[in-house]
Image (cartoon, rainbow, N blue to C red; front, side, top):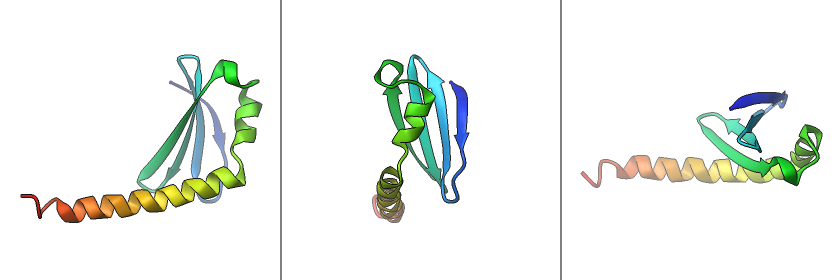
Length: 83
């Protein structure tokens, strides 16, 4: 997997990779990450991929990160209950 772009952002670490004829967009926040795979033939290059990373996408990603954290915290609480 080859890193093709770091996209600066004040809240997230956003990176675009190229692997196996796909662009992979990785958005990280703390210990959690979300990835999106896009076929190279579905876009007109890296600039097209960057245009897909909109404020709306990032806002929705934040909601998912909050849900992920809640799910993880609940799983962490349950780890000792199931023993």
